[in-house]
Length: 396
Picture 1: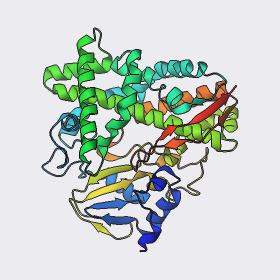
Picture 2 (picture 1 turned 90 degrees about the vertical axis):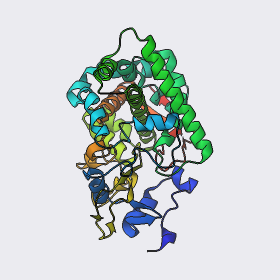
Picture 3 (picture 1 turned 60 degrees about the horizontal axis):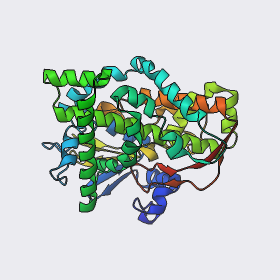
Picture 4 (picture 1 turned 45 degrees about the horizontal axis):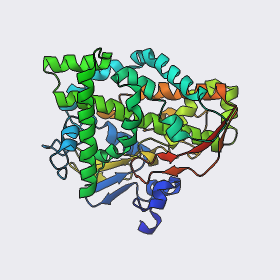
């Protein structure tokens, strides 16, 4: 293996650029790569197997948080976070809210999603806009308002600092100044949702369910607050990122937007292809509970931290022919790993898909073209490589 041919995963140019060549080099030349105590896996088969391993963990055995995380609001938030806890805590938290996120139940929120999309799109004029901030960031508002009950006037304040909270998912220790900021943001959200509960006269179905569970002793108060923030966190980030990515594809992939305008039956597969090519989350860590032999014969030992490269797995030509192309008729589009797998599979995946479908339907019925009018910018993040700005003009 020639390390010189592999991407530098800390290089800002790799982080904000096209990662396909670097990911291919990893899959072909180092599909299982040991970096200190962490093992990187990049092939689709290996990523899928690790994510689905029943004995896989989010935290080391006997711990409920990373050893480097100090006492404070971020630690409070993580210990009550459904996304980062293990059995039996994870199962208990998930059991409370899972019935509200089935595909059937999610249909009840279609009207809220559709109304928000209509209001956002109908307000767009002929002038250029930053589609991340002025469109994609607003679409989740309707559904999240229905779920959590926060007032519209709080929306900008919440989403302006939400991105900084993503540091809590870092698989590596954070420097002190980033831990300071993470504690500040985590404390803000814990206080915000606590205050929201105090001034809510008529709780939403979700909030009532959480409060009832707290009353029965099934949830602690921190767990109630954490679940509320998790719904905001996951519901906002995934939807904002995915809508931004779709809009960039519409502006840059020749003929794609016209094709969807002519045939809206292609929208579901186009959404899956966008999720595959530009996953909202590019890495997912797991700690293996047993030795596992990977597709190249490498044995990753039990107890090892394995970093699943979702972004690389989604471009694996062993599963997706011509993997770098967005194909609205790709049969295997839904085999991407963008929503994870196993015990921690994304609970909100049906809701995310519903909002993406409603957004694309709204776009193709109102506009004739999507034009890039400037250079997009991205966050330099291995885990969350989302667009930070996307200058567009939508033509009617």
